[in-house]
Amino acid sequence: IFEERIGCVPNMKVSLVLRSDAQPVFTRERDVPYALRSRVEKELDTLENAGIITPVTTSDWGSPLVVILKPDGTVRLCVDYKCGVNDRLVSSNFPIRRIDDVLCSLRNSKFYCKLGLHKAYLHICVDEKSSEVQTIATHRGTYSMNRLSFGIKTAPSIFNQIMSQIIQGLPKTEAYFDDVVCHGATYEECAQNLRACLRRLSEYDLHLNRNKCEFFATRIEYLGHVIECNRIMKSPMKVAAVSEMPRPKNV
Image (tube, rainbow, N blue to C red; front, side, top):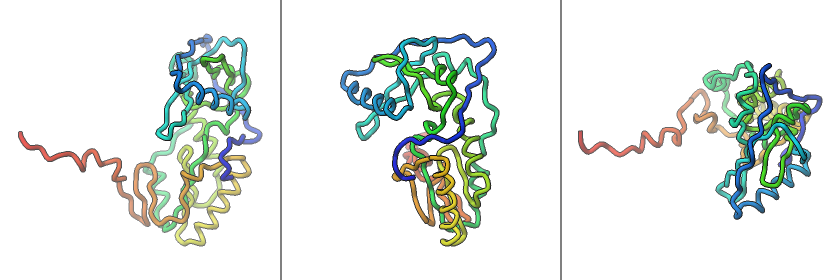
């Protein structure tokens, strides 16, 4: 489960719902800086080999690839679906939990395990029509997107609904998109809840990013807050701009 690869939630295919008057739209690819092309092409090859994307010769749909350079020098591939796809989708109405409700559910616990999913949305398969709608236009051709793509306006709601179904029935386990927290009043209770959660995630072929995980901490940072037993504080990073603001020197 800690192998950083993209799994596939079994027996589930998501369908993106188009508006009744929706017409296909194709937006041309954007230029990729020459200095980044080899890294972009390597990432495209990785996604293709994993079955996440598939080359296509023609498509009525297409949204441009957007390349983000990460601090470690690697690239993150995103897609700009605001060019037309998002306007043609029917909104998803599944409610997203209020952060206050999630934090309230952590009360009376002393130990916390925080789990971060690895490329969470890409674990969710989409049907053939949705794959075509998500087609990506790149400098070396077009690719159909076989998994739920980040940038699709309904993706957060869809993924949140799926995660709610996956962790349903697990004691003291909360999920907010790709961040999962298992907790307990004692070390033993937390460990028991963690084992149950890991088994459930493994059953659904969900994989974790080890660098985003914390285990049996008595203090964690979660959803912009610092959590301790029955204490919730704003994360210092979130209020630094205010707390470190220079004192005014004139009126």
